[in-house]
Image: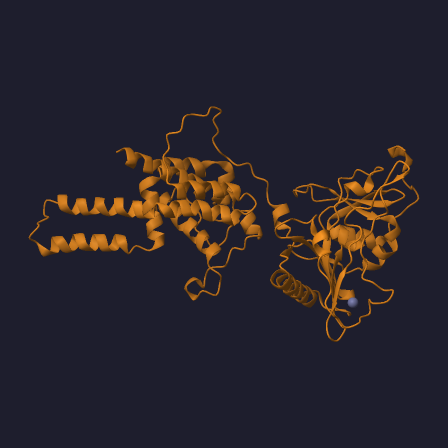
Length: 455
Ligand SMILES: [Zn+2]
């Protein structure tokens, strides 16, 4: 059996509502075989490993009845709402183990007691299921995700039902693409099915109410699955896949040398764990920031010694003059009690070369990111031509504010003007240039500490 044995049905025409729903999902119908409908994702810039959505052709009827005119994508997540049907569906993944591994985990869970509901009889919430894959004449065993038993939960009144199961036919279009488009005899091997949370509220709702209630219920279920069942799942966010792919702009030499950099173990570990946190930009940023923090005392010490020395060499300094002594005391006191924002500015002013910063900010890709219209809100933008404020001071302010946005939740009154920067947000995935910046600062500071060590 060759690939040619699966003819394209030329007479097939896709129902209009499905075409409209596909457009809302950012997908376009490409063609069909005897077994599947093949849709291609429109969004060429998104970082998808697969670029096709496959739906079994035998489920076209279900697909059509799901595709009401008001179907909408859920903002920032892979899922959709259907206000007319009071229906909400969002794809999930396991927080530790990704999305493909979910079925065996789900099979270890079972439904608690629930009221009977309208889905109990012959009217289940639709899920997608693919025909058994065949290779030649030989039946191949069904894929592991074929036989998921839905976890179906109903509230006391039987009004609202929540289900965890394989995506619905329409849910396929709104989930991560499930196929690399290799429609051949090994069809099912190519398919990565998504699992979703489906919530059927039972009656028509307004868009916003359905979105709010849906997200709220899904969060509540996910929290309890984590806490009660020790299974941390999460809704799959779109930000990770839509982040701009950005080349890291780093210097690179081919030859390895006998190392001469001496650094404390803590710094080495923070630096390397920042590099490991590639998919967690917020952690990467914080780890490099912690490298800087490690050197705060060193910078403060150096700075206060210089200031005290400056007082002492003053021709008017006198050991018997109380004012002279008081000036030294207050210098030391100011240094020791300096707030973190001042400490970091002191460190950067002393340890980072201005030319390094000017070089960094003069690169094209840095120019927009660090400008007033850059993607990170509520932080200092960088103006290398500002005559009133050194670049080091601007940079210190910026990275300190980002750090605060990551560390402080909004309920802290001390940081009431600070909006928390969530780890899976679009802003988090736009952080890379700032991560490159703190990495550069960390390297500068480590290098500067080498000079001190040798001097
Ligand atoms: Zn039900």
